[in-house]
Length: 82
Image 1 (tube, rainbow, N blue to C red):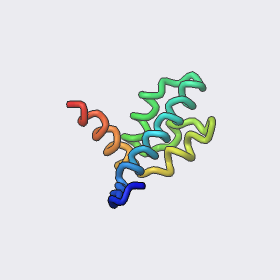
Image 2 (image 1 turned 90 degrees about the vertical axis):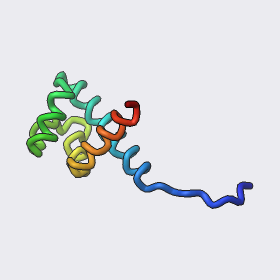
Image 3 (image 1 turned 90 degrees about the horizontal axis):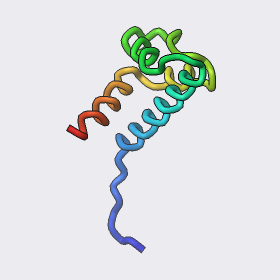
């Protein structure tokens, strides 16, 4: 048994949740024959959910997350390796 206090970081949980949503949406778009990167960029830049297919609930999933949070997670993941 560990007697030390564990620190729970909500930001890590949020990031993992957003990453999972992005993976799900990517797969759904790819499954439908779309270019997932171009569709996601279109959505992030415009805010128009029409860029995201409703296949496998991708549109519902992506619109459940604020677009600024999506960008934050993408940048954090990319820049942590720099």
